[in-house]
Image (cartoon, rainbow, N blue to C red; front, side, top):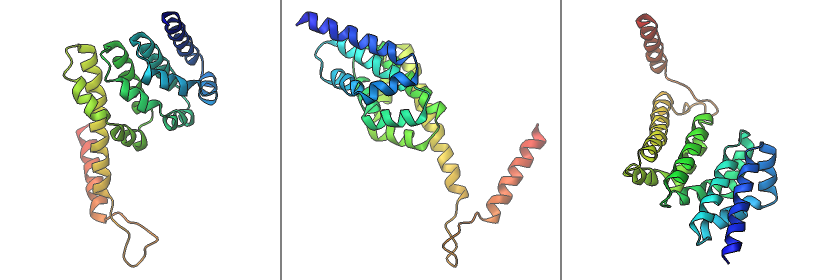
Length: 194
């Protein structure tokens, strides 16, 4: 049995390396259901080293640059699997996962990713990770938390500037002239300050 676990661990490491070559290889791993098998190994293996290598391979896949491919990986459950792995006692894997989440959020400031990560319970995991004595883990958890906070502030600003459609014309929406004036005044003040 130990030999089998060593083979699985090495296979996971090789697949993780393959995923770093290009997005085409990541797509092949997803289409051939190898990524799904990696997620199952990461969730069910009783061997810590095997889970670690499977997690690293999933992280490598999620570092893809193609946004459509990233959506595909999300739909397959890659983010869910990685969020579950944050609970492991391995700080190096947790740091890799957080770095990947941070780069995805920075590169694709899409509300879908933020809301998905909220649904997965990433925010509660971030709070727990910020209590870690490992400074690298702490810093990465704080960095991802700040991205969530800045996204929430951005959403709040958008909500303040939007008004509902006119009752007379439901096909259009409008921004109140007072909001436009405030925005223009704010922009003028910023220009004067510079």
